Length: 619
Image: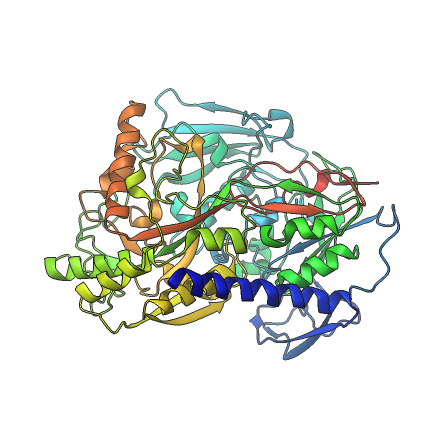
């Protein structure tokens, strides 16, 4: 009975999505009214859209209130398609979010900043080639040397890398400042947890030489990829001069970096227009104008793609084949690694002491966290075995109430798998995978477990689903909410902007379960497991107990690959044994490519985002 109810809900959703597409395709236009209130610092540089309804920045103002109300007309599918070759000087890519302009790393905690690299606005210190090897000819660091004691790395920089808009040439001070600012005290940089535990402040030796200094014992052998374009962990290189002249607040609103494209206009929540940098040191783009257009609704994106209004679109797999079939000459391209959708049962902060050996508060008592509330049905109290077992049954019930197959087939086009663990990026087909970690749909057992846990009549649980994150399908969040409702659990569903909720991921203050993700990554099978589980931050929303955390740090130095894998296996056993996190899909994302595009060479990255914009060529 439960399966039929769920299939009927998903089938109805698919019909509604199809009707939306048909409605647009038959010629009806759709209007979206967006109400925005935003206050940002002013800056010396103006980013304006001529004749537009909003002003992004007012020069020299101390602060600027931007928009009260904007009406955006969405495409009508009866528009005449572009003839072949019509976009020889312009390419348009759809994206789920044109996020706020924040170009000072320490102030930039939106969680989508890696797109600046993908759009070729910013550049990393290093680049690697298609084999993952250091590419000296295309790196800002033209060479490097690792100290024999592995305590430092010295980088020699190119002397011809220019910042946009005449802000000068990149120097060692710019590189050192970019990294130091990203990991400074109080930084909200989206990857600060991948920097602070491992590095001492970077030092400019001279104008063209900069030195990375490792914290004691924290050297790891895959560091080069972590500083390259295939990682989403490190900062792009930006100008210290801008901050010196304007201060951090104003400088953050100046979108200047070093990439092949510079920012011409930037309308938050709408669009961004980029211009090719002439004679760029690394790669002068083949297309003069590159536009990023925010389109969050999949049916709208499909309609715009069909009529040639956009050239690249991250169309959900459930709609992808139909869009390609209806667009002669269109193709598809896989991007990123297989993305795991998972639910984190936030609030289970179980560490008693700070077990991070690089932390200034190492050894200090941290329990209880502000977000620890065992009165929440899904949160266990580590000091009360009965509470821990009851909460485990609740979490397990919620995990097996999710129909993985229905979600994969109806919402992800059947392109993905249905099992995996975001703890380590392991999944079925890997030699390390064990069937005991799999969770399969069993609503009757879920109801039985809830009764055993003391909730025969259910309860209410909040669930946050990011509306604009490239790794999240909001419809899947809605489906899970309905599936939980079917076993008697009411869901307070919040589908809203990722950036608004992200700050509460840190410091153990959050107690709202949320839909996020990981990746299936065979190359990282023996690397340290997910540090967001409390080893370095509380990003995932829970903490493992004290005796599990050291396994994370051990994998940075453990010489035996077999032991590193065993450490990870223990972590997976713990997290999935307690059902602190449950994966429900492993989806391989794609971009639909329009018929006017001759070629595109995206580089590998774990995130399913557009990359290597400067390699796009049109017919």
